[in-house]
Structures are given as structure tokens and as C-alpha cells.
Amino acid sequence: QVHLVESGGGLLQAGGSLRLSCAASGGTFSSYAMGWVRQAPGKERECVAAISRSAVTRYYAAFVKGRFTIARENAKNTMYLQMNSLKAEDTAVYYCASRVRANGLGSRVNDYDFWGQGTKVTVSS
Image (cartoon, rainbow, N blue to C red; front, side, top):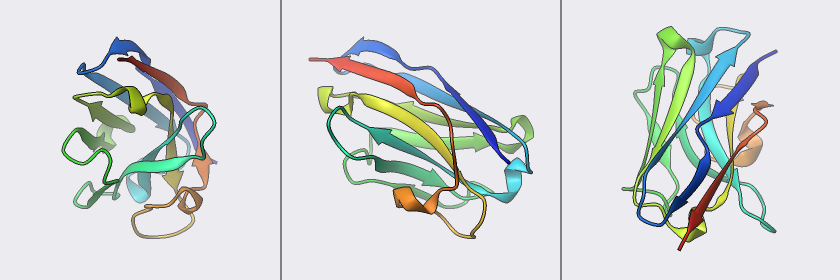
């Protein structure tokens, strides 16, 4: 069982930056891939970014590429999402998720086994 807790969400203006954190407990953090998934109001969840166990491989959705950076510190059991040049359309609840039961990077929502409770990001235009 993996327990995930996100933090760092908030309200900010378009063009600003925010860093989300995800603290993990349970299991061996360095043994599973992680990802960030978001859900905007009235929309389905979508994968934003993913990172392999050793952080060698990363995936970014096209709509965040060049603006967001995913990272992890295995020694601290923590994953991050640095979000720059935020847009109103980035407004969503952001969830961190772990891919424990399978190998490889997860670029789809269904690739993940455990989820945090989410942190809300609101970007005003």
C-alpha cells in the first residue's frame, strides 16, 4: 500500500509559477514510477507528466511541454512538479500517482495504482 500526499496548490495569476510536491510513504519509493494527473472542472482526468524510478526517463503531455518539469528525490520519498508560465486552462485539481504493479513509465491515467487526495491549482487570467 502506497500513501501519497500532495501539497503546494494555490491561486495565482496567469504567467506565474508554482511548485507542487508529493510525499510518498509505504513501499519502496525508488522502485516505482510516478506521475502527475490533473482534472479540470467538468473534464476527465489527464496525465500531465511522468517520471521513471531513477528519473532517467520523463514524459510530458504536449500541452505542458516546455512549461512544466517533473522531478523526484528518492532519498526524500518526494516527487515534484514545477509549473511555469501557467495559463487559465491549467486550472485543475492535480493528483500525484504511483505505478507500482507494472514496470515502465505511465502516460495514461489507467497506468496508475495509487493516488493522492489532490491539490487544487487555480490560475486567473
